Amino acid sequence: MERRYAIRRVEDGLWEVYDIDNYMVVPVGGVALTNLLDEEALDALELLKGGFLTPSKTRKIKP
Image: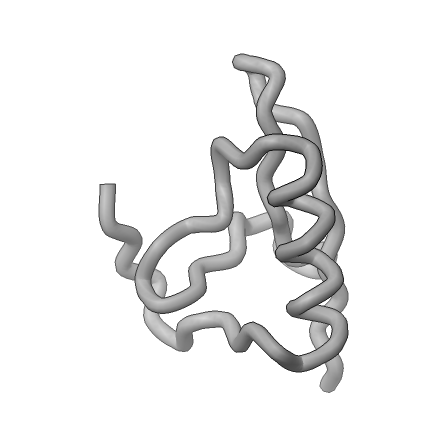
């Protein structure tokens, strides 16, 4: 099943990329795609949709 992603604004005004199906923040290389500036979030979303970034299979997120 193809994963679908979107961005949402977090409390501090920054953005995070999340999985639409489970509402979890997307980890890439063990790092959560959160606390991103506008352009960073949009770029990450585009790279995920294009297949240039691949989410980590593990749920462990580095702080």
